[in-house]
Image (cartoon, rainbow, N blue to C red; front, side, top):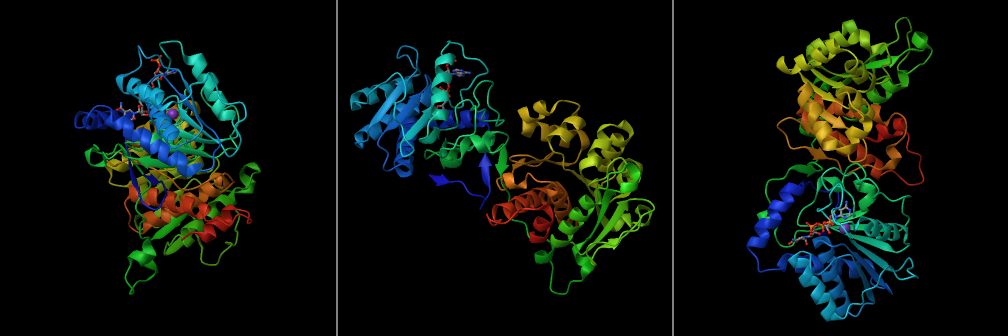
Length: 500
Ligand SMILES: NC(=O)C1=CN([C@@H]2O[C@H](COP(=O)(O)OP(=O)(O)OC[C@H]3O[C@@H](n4cnc5c(N)ncnc54)[C@H](OP(=O)(O)O)[C@@H]3O)[C@@H](O)[C@H]2O)[C@@H](O)CC1
Ligand SMILES: [K+]
């Protein structure tokens, strides 16, 4: 068993791949072995998480996820713990593995109760074994009401919560709760999830991170049988331009980045030059050799906030040599320069208002699509609303399946897509989709998206492939936030300066 960290990448398997592994493993092992291992792993983690728990309440559903809970109950009872189980199953209809586990729990003397003990406290433990990967949009046997009542009790309890396989009601593929399953309020209790056999993508994106808390994996001894991963959690740390180059380097060795954005105050009375400066600062601190800034503020001449930055007009950019980061604070002014940017930038990171402009203009969308045919690389960095505009759907539809949305965008525009949000997703056609595991809610502050765009630009300029540049920058950006001192405000400009 291991506790997940961002230190190394992990394979992710969707439900179909996990089911295939489960079938292959079950076929090669004596009956009930997998569930016994699952129950043993759950009991082991329960004892490690709450060694002094006075009470352990296990809520078990009528399927095999409930069977895992029953198996754990038997073991915890044998270990001398005060366990109680609420089981929604029916011995005549429950799957064979779960029925065997129920019999073992009965034989071990586990007490069965209709609901949770009245006085569960913060030092106690609840185990959520209501629903695993067998979640369906609607239940067929009508136990749904009872199940939701037990889930509400788990969510409201002050006790540490350990979810078996995944938090009940969470879709393992998408990271979205099925309707009616999400907690009413964020929990203050500690949360852990013990993923069994495989790690599923839904644990790490959308609502998954908040639902799961700390994630643990036990492959039940079947890791060697695992099929090809369907996605990947995290990525290898990539050497950026500075580390990859030889001692005899010069500023041209690390690539040029040109940030194009920052609508001026005079255009519509809303100055957005800060976004361009932030992206430029991130590119500079992220290792770019030279950083140019082309502000969309015709008529105004501003001194750059750092002397290393070079001001340019868009028409004076040396397109074949540079990586363009376009759109940060671009407002409406970016629309006018996009035809040239899309046609000429050798490498392009398109962000924010650049994406909105493409979403609303079929000629720009066609120009974006044509870049791939011309051998020009492009990375799009939408947040969910921008992705929805590009896909001509709602934000809720994007969030309903973030991996699918990122893949659809990558396919449609023949480029790399970073779909931002909790568990950012990097997708490129023909590459393994990567779900990011770094970052936290402190990044939800103005300007951090501009910083990310600039950092991606620096890595693309340094020669990484679009997929590697995007995924490694997302990981480094999140890691910088994870390492941020608790007592220090996280601002986008400080984040840009702290990038490595
Ligand atoms: N077999 C093995 O060897 C291994 C299996 N493993 C474990 O099995 C888990 C998968 O088990 P599974 O396939 O039985 O599905 P599971 O997650 O228990 O859900 C089915 C139950 O949920 C119910 N239900 C569904 N939707 C509902 C809804 N919307 N609202 C309300 N109820 C709903 C459904 O009720 P029904 O709709 O049939 O009335 C049925 O009772 C997996 O996650 C892992 O933990 C591991 O131990 C590895 C070895
Ligand atoms: K569960």
